[in-house]
Image 1 (cartoon, rainbow, N blue to C red):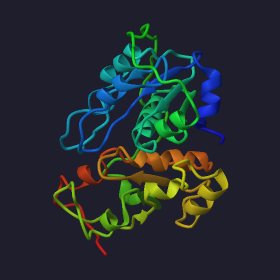
Image 2 (cartoon, rainbow, N blue to C red):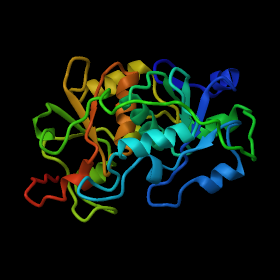
Image 3 (tube, rainbow, N blue to C red):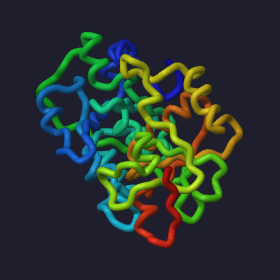
Image 4 (tube, helix red, strand yellow):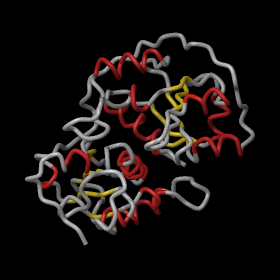
Length: 269
């Protein structure tokens, strides 16, 4: 694969010359620290999505972007350095890892890769599993949050192509297992994150992804934004679009932020 992805085989060949972040997480479940302790890629540092990659829930949704000082300090604590490749992985098909990838890119780190196929690809490749860990040498990461495009609630309706990354039944408003209001942002089109992956759980080829997104109007040169329930899994679509050669904005508040104002329109069906 090309672009922002790295295969397990290629990662094995680059250890220990990269910084590896373990972002294992399940939406609505406990943090993945126990899974990290049970076994991880050698030298990896654990990153807690709720504490390090998001602010507390509020008007900005269930997973607002973290405060800059919180994020930068968390990355330094995990050993992230300016000018050194970072590889992020999870055990959730890249959804949490995509959030870490997006944030690091947003803060100006240009060399960030997501492990294609996630933790299962690492173990299937025969990658070494480490069960002990030591605190990383603190990194010198620095940056400000302006390198990746974002849109907010006031802007999103004006974006020509708005992609809803949730499952089709949530997009249509038939069910809503998490948020108190069902439906979607008016005019949004649906590309569930599952469509980004093949039957092995790897990202589809750039050509396949380009075709998928072009079918909803998201192509090079178009103004595109993505959202989901809380701004986490939408980064998976932004990552897939990046693989396809399309730069897309993220709406961090996403559906959970949109519905905090009852005056905002809701579409179903």
